[in-house]
Image (cartoon, rainbow over all chains, first blue to last red; front, side):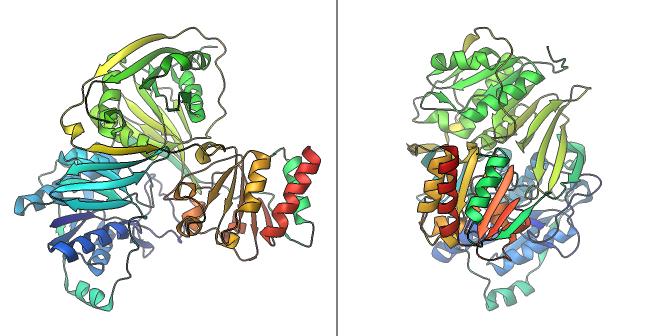
Length: 262
Length: 331
């Protein structure tokens, strides 16, 4: 089983996240980390390979710092890691990102068959959840998204997913692109051995030229959306904080009625 | 007054409906769509006839009823099939803008559709406007609602998914019976590689849908699994009940009640969070709420940093007192 796991370097949730003057997410400094939801995908891959044998390859797209996501994937069992990095990629929208990832995955597929492409359910910076479907379409593969459970048998993947209005069981033939939710497993912490082994691994850097991707098809040049303005929201005003000394419930009722909230 | 617009075609609105009823967020989409251009409704499956008067009231001038011509079970619910069908309707109507409600399902349909019709896409938007030059612009919040972002879609066609509770829905000043066009779509073989072998519609709880509710009451670890005080207040206020990941993982309440980055995003007029600390995993899904009320025993809980009204106290004392007082005063 040869599995590609797409990972993303995102600003740490606990840090002061911001946009720069060009409306792009600030991705510099030591405040970045592996997108937490990618840990579920890496765990699925590690479990499958532990069961069936094979190889896990982590792939990311992003500026120089983004290689950190691949190194963290090494700690979580990835055997190999690829970083698609090129100045022309900056400012990519979901389609540009999908083009870059798909090109890397096709190159890996040219070496040997890729059976499965896994992603997390969302990246915690943008939270759009659009990439998995866009990537599947770019690769010409079927997609199974938001898998809360996944089983593989006889070359067919079966997933269960919970939507707003329904619970579904879906199937698709492999190879397929599958996004997994944080319900699918409880990612293990990297082991000491895993961390030591990760240090010996090298992140392979591939440029757009290496992948024969037209630089104008990706990045800001190829993007179909452009951030016009990004401004921090002012903090909430007139905030009230009280300690309950016996009538806090009544005071809250007063507040809700006064402000016509009930 | 007619709004001037330079959109090159109509606005196509995907109508979310359940058990024959139009979902409330769809009426917000129609309100936004009217300001941008002529509104064409897109309806999957049966039940359009019953909904036409309401759609007309909200300014729909024509309606497309999509029929999926396939023997495959649940084909209409496959995002890739739905995207092909919406794309067919876009081509037939020459729509310049497609609006959907921002659910996980629709975001997936939206991105596949956008790819198919060479459109730019923005999801989780709070609003959409047409700039003077005819470009579609959106507003959305980012980073747990700590930033406001305005985005321009630079392609001739645009797809925008709007979050529920973004604007008040308002009926159109005047309306006429919409013409109905049937669009029959045969899905491609590629779109049918994924199959839905089982689909169970969720049973209604009798409370408003979490994502759509005007009032949401959420409980976390501090409830210790006892949601009775929350339920009592929710019954009183006609509110939806939500929870943190801890509470759903403990099995205290169903997983679909989880509010947060990986669960439901809520933006009610009033959010009341009790017995929850306010970890970013949760607040990322509720920070756009109008008024935030928090009750927690720990004065250091981060939820107090974003609360408009915070009470350091015991939820099992404060909530019953609140319910009793509201019952007495509101009758």
